[in-house]
Length: 452
Image 1: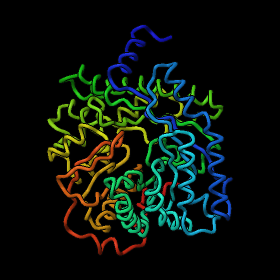
Image 2: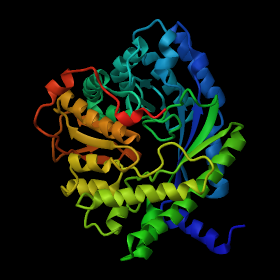
Image 3: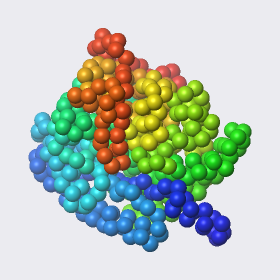
Image 4: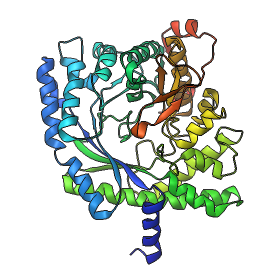
């Protein structure tokens, strides 16, 4: 039984501290939609998604209304399209992205993720066709997200894929230049991508997953920030304990919503992803949590240590609250989506190098970072390679969402709107990495990958 105090605490978290369910994401396998005719394949994809996810949005609304728990997004993740499309006799996979977009519109979901390819050890012809289709696919759709996995701890880093992604990111930026290159905000380049991530833009439904599942992503930076205000001046042991207890309460709510959504939709419950995902709203910032620990501004010395404590404590508290914790689970640091990160970047306290250091201890990586539109493709590839190396060596998921904003430079701002927010454009190093990226091949896996 819940005590009166616990019920009141939960009401306060929902009412005053920005606690929400960030997403209910239905994962759907599309492996049985393969067809040599790309238009037939597209129609199969549309029919299957609209059949299985028919009640997803309404179920989310019903739970929100009945339980009083805000559910911000309703999303779908699908099998990596490069796998589904391998049988198609077509060079351009844009029609498949358009079919996904049509399904998103029909169902009124916020995003569909999975226009994806896994190329960490090599590229099939289908993988290459999907990557080549990205500029067209992301320019012609609004709700479709893509992810490309270019590295794993077991395989190393596919530098040919890394080089190609730098070029494609530049092309996507140009194709969506009239909207501050927003197409790049819907593309994540991964190392060690996970199969059950409910968060966009990196969500896809892995081949090890069931036919259809429900994954839930919770979020509560405001709740953690509020809890730490009662621990001012206390030693870090007590700070960590406070965060753990808070993460436990947040995750219990996520488990409740996930199980109820799965029951009503008649599909298995997958995982709760207990990541602290910020928004541009004041009071919903990961950066402000770090500053509450004693930093004058996020990005100053001590930021990486504070983030490491936060990430670890969130995981420790969450795993006690749910039998199935998965996804990414920890703390996100997307610059454009976090009011405190935006302020720190504008103040000059956050640079690309410091953000890279922080990714060693957070949940994902260089996320939603706007860079000058004239940044060379080779520099973008080199940044991806650095981030992939952190993931590969540390056996963790890392990623890049880099946005070279066409026509804008350092000191200007890119505006995306909604949860994607806005970002000050930050500088990259002016020295060239072109010869490094041009080598191609594969950076070998580290010694500790041989753990059979």
